[in-house]
Length: 301
Length: 170
Image 1 (cartoon, rainbow over the protein chains, first blue to last red):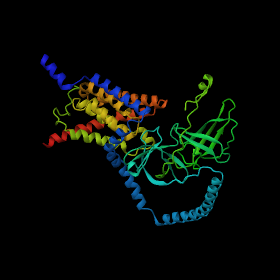
Image 2: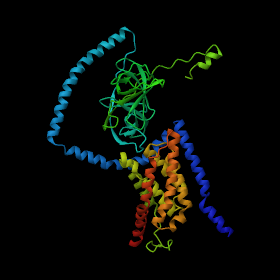
Image 3: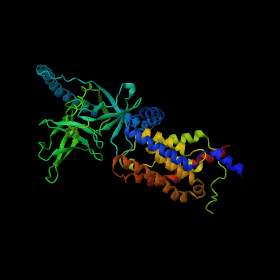
Image 4: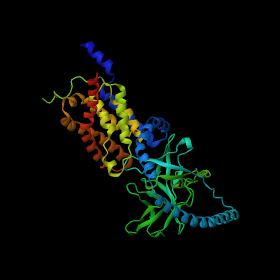
């Protein structure tokens, strides 16, 4: 009897409960490290190499369907689309000439005022491979990764406005967090009044909200929000959202402001990835406060 | 006699590792199809069902460790929190391995009720992590638990028949 028991122990290794506890602790540890620190990105991208062939295969039927439907487009539809694009191109080029002269003028004015020049940004074209599987997440994966010099933090937009930001880079894929993802923040400015604010994603729906704006704030329905550019991530002046609904209830200290994104956040397949903006100058080190009472009020950064 | 199913062959061919690997890869493929909207909500977790099948039918080959590893792969392919699927699949595998003999004694209909509890626990663990990370309980996830439970009978019948036909050929 004794020998069989020894045999079983040698054959099976540690018991099920011990294994359960070990792997549960390991998983919890991994989740903790993943949320708090960024040590596991290399492991993730190494494992993604194993999974990416399967993922590519899974998106193949959809891609083939899209390509097939592209192939069977009628000539009249193409001609119609071509006409529309022509008229739009002519209208845009007239505006572009104006824009060039304005750019020159702006640069000269900035030189005169000794302000920092706005740097032009290059963009790269990318296509959405698939959307996030989780129904509560607002993320998409695009077909450019570290092999195309993608970096976390780069801004993704379409022809209408900001769509999101690259948050994770794999060898051939990048994960884009959309601006409607819960708690995703974009520093914005109201185009009409120049008011600065931060637009947060609302999560479940395709909406954005401006938080912590006083009830008396100067904002109206239909106001366009553009990026303010003071964060060093989003280049300034790109359209983000339009104000849709404002609720000013005197019972609450802040107004509830709901905005809809201008960019096709969950519409298009083709996106533009902007090259990384130059880093901002270092934050000045906070001067040590002379008295103890002041040091308590000082901000942590 | 519930434990002596006449249709079920007594001896099945020993499962090759390639077969297990292929079935898990197929499950990852099915999970990775471009599901959207309502379909995504109702999508059963193919990987969980396949892993539960192997954990109950081959508990010495496929156990907690392998399920954890497959969970990590699911995490990477879903871009979810690193360890979220791994944790829930660990619980799933534990339930499957511990109850493996009991589950194999029943026929498919009775197995479904047994399996539903294990899957419910797995989804509960997943939802618990989601609640801790995001601050709200996602009840919609449990719709997927129902479809996963319904998938158990066809999926295990399919895998069982694939093992069986191989023996018939020889």
